[in-house]
Image 1: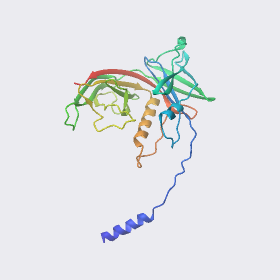
Image 2: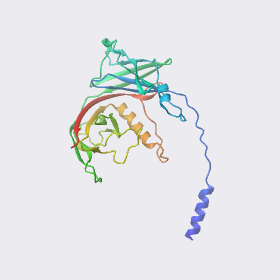
Image 3: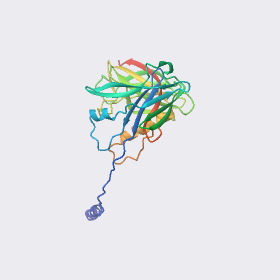
Image 4: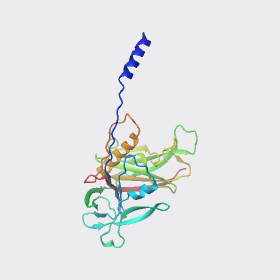
Length: 291
């Protein structure tokens, strides 16, 4: 009897199959903004054009995607500075471009300051794009950074990093972290942003996995560090729009290829249909050697 029910259910399921064709239309390329300002550092803005879904990504295509000769202005409410375009090598023979402080016009130049708001204006191809970001106060910075034996791993050279910190009382704080190992790059954690809904007003000890290169899928032990590594921990207070952008971006990244993931839209803060975000960081750095 059970076998008969199985056969009938199987027949029913296959009889319900229907081919569905998706007509993925070509969408126009739009401006993509990657802009940031950090306390004590000059603002940087990278402008590119989005790719077609079917594009075959290579170094030459990446180089050609950079938006050249745009007018980019940043203001701290007192000074307004026009950023200058600079070129730097992406790979041998291929250049990338970014906009930053114009060294020939330092009278209006500035670096990021804590508890300060900024506006960004971009004019490109006859269109104007605007955004705003804030560098908040630097609060809730780590009290200490320490390492423990990595769990469930026999190799005693593998260590997990923990941070002890006290979060200020009062909801509304947002954070992002990145790590740098030895002479490598600063890389964000797989889930690099968090808020204070759970930790508000408390002293907490939390493990912070190593940042990952999203162009190189992480390995099984990528959460951990090796004995003797020099680790720099970058801990940032961020504003809500920066948190929202990275939170939705990382959720979308983790959903790639998962047919059961819920629909998601990356929420940037650039006007006029552009993608990306202008982010403000109140950054704290701590360097320790894994012992």
